[in-house]
Length: 273
Image (tube, rainbow, N blue to C red; front, top):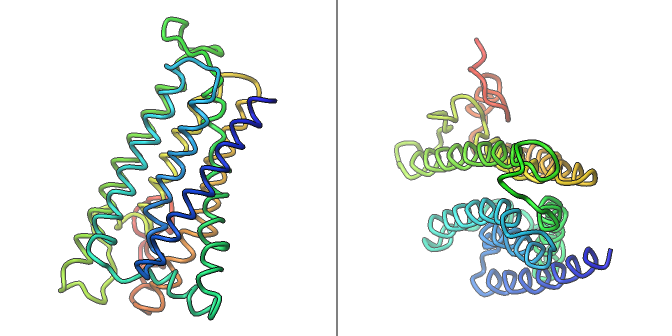
């Protein structure tokens, strides 16, 4: 219990300080979309703290720390390179918040956006805590509390998710960058099979990370909370609903037709008209 309290106290302090710096960066640039860059990094930072303070061996710690840093650097790097570095206009989600928050925009951006996302990062950290207490030995066999079966399966799912998300992001970025596609709906590549393949493969990444330590102890079944919670966030809270709202506003009937023919989240073949 002492280890749990110390680990999460350190993670909470780091999260508050990191999100405060991200808020200040966004305020100074007058672009609060920098939080999207910080999202991956704050999760990786929390994971690093929990892993560093854990009692487990270095093999178990690297089993979760390596994938989360690969994910964070790819996602944050892509968003910084394509949106922040190029002075891309602030995401419509945040311009909408500005209208809602009025004169208290800076304070409410800090409390309702940056600190809330920091809190969500802490909620998603369950697999990192359990992996940090784990003694994982490759020569102990595939099954059992020290087995490596779920590590291998988790890494396979993780890489499927990373590759799929990278392809989705590339296809969308290329489509939007082409001036001939202005006002059109991106339905090329993986976007033919899902209206939000980037969110789907993001979820696959977290399924992979979540199952890695699941057999390490009876309590580690709680690691499955992370992919379940991420699915709810992406599908019903901050992912698909926000994206669909603004796509309908900007593309109207074209997007409605896309909704009728293409699954929202799970990839599948287009529905017959």
